[in-house]
Amino acid sequence: MANGEAKVAKERIEAVEPEKNLITFRVIEGDLMKEYKSFLITIQVTPKHGGPGSIVHWHLEYEKISDEVAHPETLLQFCVEVSKEIDEHLLSEE
Image (cartoon, rainbow, N blue to C red; front, top):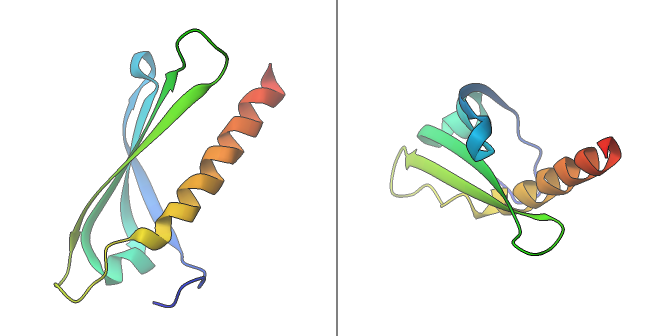
């Protein structure tokens, strides 16, 4: 798939662990499923020590359909954008 091309994904929440500020999604339908057998996204937020703000860790666990399929680097910008949206949402609730 070309860079910058819009993609569609439907995901299911697999796990929510509020005490760890962690949520896991499994992609179950959409464009990613054309290239990957499985795709799991875990987001964990850790408050920064000694200062305001938090650190967001994204863990992408996937199995490619074949060796020809590229690693999902194109999703990195998506992760950045979603992290910014979460940040804006949380700041608006303070």
